[in-house]
Image (cartoon, rainbow, N blue to C red; front, side):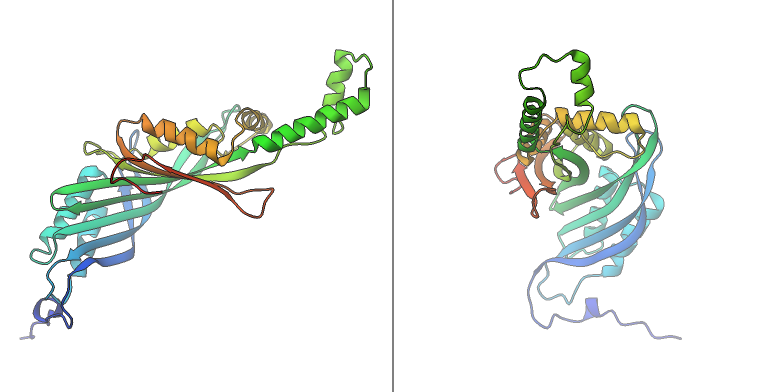
Length: 307
């Protein structure tokens, strides 16, 4: 008859006594099915972190395999939602009775959305980095959602300088001469007419929100839509020439510094009822400078996110 295997975590005492804030696992790779706001659930490849507190100062350690098996059960038998995440955290704690009173988990993945072009109606896939995280302390659970949205930003200062150069080019070409509409239109269609263009750059909005308790289906698409609709110039997937032209028009009509982008998102999130708190960081990856332009803002509530 085989002898029972030793369980050092249960039987051995800590070499040095003390409580630990978090002990667990990171970079767990699993497929997860995300409950959808509309349509079928989407399966993603997630990287997961799972932790519990070690509140018994004498205990050697936690039972990491129990964390893994609980996450694996969620991956195989359920969809990722507010309620399933809360149940997972409860399992983390119940399987560490006497050891842990707090638990936390996070899921990071790329969420793919089918997006329409601006004019032509063509469709293509766009990927958005998403992190869903939750923490339970006592009976209280806090659920957070973080997304990244890439967009284009055109510098207002550069646009003003370009317009001035076009005005100077016009004066140089025509002086005080009478100019017909046809002649003007023809000149504006040449490189001499549009002698300068403003600089724009790919930019990134990283938005983290704390969700209200009643949220179950994770509002991933709704949050992405709010961000893109506020900024108005999200990067495109499939494009034809008419889409590229419309994108150029949108950039020209939505000139923004990083401060403008952050304030747009601040205003939008402030009026979102399911968002209890938020942190926004916008990064404009400058085409003029070797450095980036960055703006960071939070809701500014007491005890909330810090910049």
